[in-house]
Amino acid sequence: MASNTDDIAAGAVNLELEAMRTDDCSWQPCEIYFSPTGGGLVVKYEDNDSQDTLTNEKEALMRIRARSLPLQDDDCAHIKPGETVLVNRDSESEGGFFDAEVEKVIRVRHSKRTKCRCSFMIRWLKKDVNGGSLTVPSSSVMRLANKSINHHPTISAFIDAVQLSNSSDSDMSPQMDIVGDFDLDLHDLLEKQIEGIRNSVHGSKKRIRDEISMFEDVSKPNGRTLKVEISTEKKSFKEVNPESKAKGWTKKTRIPCNPTSNN
Image 1 (tube, one colour):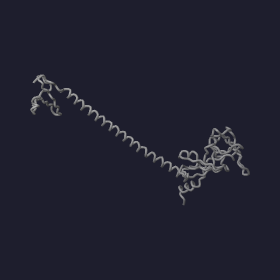
Image 2 (cartoon, rainbow, N blue to C red; image 1 turned 90 degrees about the vertical axis):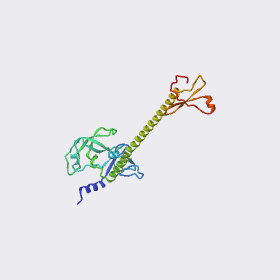
Image 3 (spheres, rainbow, N blue to C red; image 1 turned 60 degrees about the horizontal axis):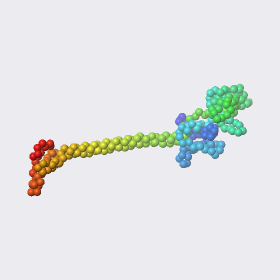
Image 4 (cartoon, rainbow, N blue to C red; image 1 turned 30 degrees about the vertical axis):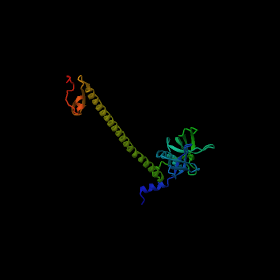
């Protein structure tokens, strides 16, 4: 015994479709298949060789639906004002089936010997279709099937492929954000390190200049010259006597930072 799921699957396979054309928004029976080049879903219209290619799920669900059905027997009795129907716009210059809203139902008693003679006052839903409100016979009206196309094998596969592609793109975005944040943090860290090095070098140079300015070479009246040697640990000084230098020896004398005597 076939399950309800099996019945839905079998019905979806045999489901006939119609699609809305982009040039005039008319609905026509169609066939659908995947593009051989992988560019989307191809919609081939039944009446001619023209076709459209759909590339996203929203567009596919808006422009493809289950094929509308002609009115039979007492179907007209189930159509109410405000309902959307598909109506044949039959004229010499332009024809086609377009969506319309039922404004009023003009009912005529059915007879077994004649076809339905009911008529409908409708209003075109497409603004570009001229004519405004008009009355059409039941033979020009079709009921919308109101069946889901999501279980149609081709439609279902197309939707899955689009969602998978969108999911893959979304998964990559956070990774790109993480990489961008890491690059930004690393850049800031390097800038701070470079700034620290610059400040350290600037401070060292300033201390050296300050120490040198405190201990400049001084000439004494007795002809001796004080030569200053600066140590990083202690400040020591050498007093050099030109006469003793000539003899090959040097007398080291420790002097205060601010000498007040001439000795």
